[in-house]
Every structure is written in structure tokens, then in C-alpha cells.
Length: 108
Image (cartoon, rainbow, N blue to C red):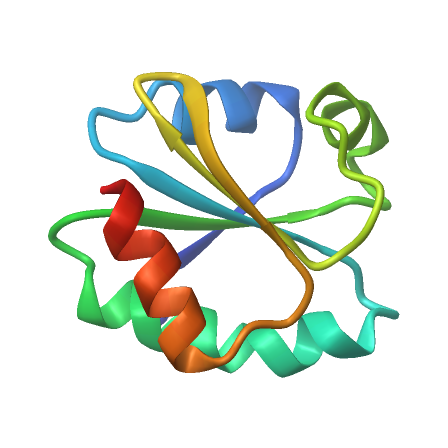
């Protein structure tokens, strides 16, 4: 069972990301995005490794253009970390496992 939760709409985003009591990593992606597919298994691994410290969500930017626009998502994959309802870090593009791990651990 995956520790990555799909965020499907505005209400979901409000509840699962902005309303979370622990930090949340959001993977903004799209089905057609090659680098997004490359990054997905690394995000899954990290979600498992850090499940006690952080929540991990995926949001399809094609289905949620308003949220993507609100947070200035212009290129995918984009990873954002939210704490207490606020964005505290952003990485754009495919990352290595080490880069992803360092990014997340530096923000939680």
C-alpha cells in the first residue's frame, strides 16, 4: 500500500495539505510528463521512509489548474513542502534520490 495520497480537488488540497498537522510534500505532476514518471518511485520510497515525519501527496496539474496557478507551477515535476499551511520549499525538475532526500529533510 502506498503512502502517497492523491489530492483530487481544492477541498482535498485544503484538508490534506494546508490543514495537515505535519509537513506535507506535494508532487505536482501530469500523466504525460516523463520526468514526473521518473521521479514517482523516488517519491514513493521517501514517503515510506519518512511516513512518521511527513505526509506525501500527488496532484495532477491538468486536473487542478487553479491550484497549480495559485502556487505558480509553470514546470513539472514541481515538489513543494508545506508546513502549517504555508509553502516552505520548492524544487523543480527531476531529482536524484539523494537530492530529494536532502531537500525534504532540510525542510521538516
